[in-house]
Image (cartoon, rainbow over all chains, first blue to last red; front, side, top):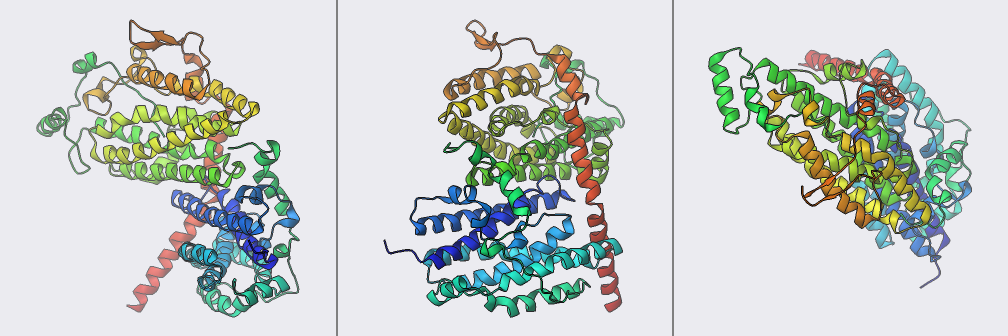
Length: 253
Length: 333
């Protein structure tokens, strides 16, 4: 086996951790959504994301060659070794914030998967082919809600605008340039995420406008989850998610 | 996931009164029931038949959505990604069962909102099994094995019940429940092959869920308050005690394969009867839980009410948006 390219593993880990951590957050809704149809939709989208995480982390583990499987990667790393976008780990808060987050993230994911269909890593290209259908549905579902909530009642408008104001600064991280991203792009594994910014804005801004929401101006705020420096929230999410694997080391389930 | 079985022995069936509202329609209705046919949403039906169905179907639907809570309690802590996916899919299926059942109830002229209101205000019951807490991961397996197993025994006869929309919903639900039961059993098999701590967790969960599971079949036939009428109407087809016995006989064998014991010293094979004998059921506990004298009931209901109230602004926004959209379309036309 050839020596693994660290940028390749890092790239896969970012994709896998985004899906894992957002899937975990979305699963918290199960049984608590505003209507039964949304309980099912959110559980279903969480399932899609967990499925994506399994494929991506298993693939990353194989390339790494240290014998770590999807579960060891998902449950037995410490905070600084997770590479998800900070946006994915933020608490759900209300349904409005959950939908705005899904909208911002799923549209980013759609653009990524589109480019990854042509990845030089054929396994990643196959994962993209499956995942893009899911991401398109997530983007459609969340976009419909953003419009309903933004252009609904005065209360829903206010809540949705507040959610957008809160989440928007974290989207700068999607596109923050960095060497491992560029190395991955150079090797043809996938696009540098910074390349996607214009396309993403051209997709999300019209929907936000239709929802009668004001797109916030960019601020100097920076978040660094994809580089392994997270918010305070990730530690709590992990302590819950990792509980069984940490309590019963080595047990099979 | 299941309805509290309220049934009586078959020999009492003919003594049951028939509702009489319109003799000509009633005769047609009775003939259809007697021939084993289905009553459909647009058919005439006695008011008492309709009410009984609304009560039973909505109670069943509420049980499905309240039932999402005890299992949902472990989604975020599932030990592997595969088990997390299985559990999510299962809980999602339960939401789906709730949805078909509310839809079946709606064919009888009630709205989902009215039914939910009855749940939230405590007027409607749901299966008391969901008031018990899920304390360890093994509970997820035991719920699949015992609770879903008991639910299947209760529900298979409903696939042939006389009300068409309910019977059809039950066919689909039973298929999914059988799958859930196998997944639960598989989870337990994996744990029993593991460490002493894992086996101890499984046995502890069996100890806690066994009696509540066999109570799911409802009171003994001699004490069943309803309903000759339900049997007469073809809504109930097999008695509580017969179903319970069938479940116990099947489950004891599965427990042997698994390597766990049931918390009932009187549980043993009776060659003469060709069935297992079992110990006395603590009906005081059953009725306490059914009647909501438990903190589990308070917590489950509070969780449902909170979800509903927290979501009110979302539902209002969706309606308001639709109204605005329709008004814009109207102006454009």
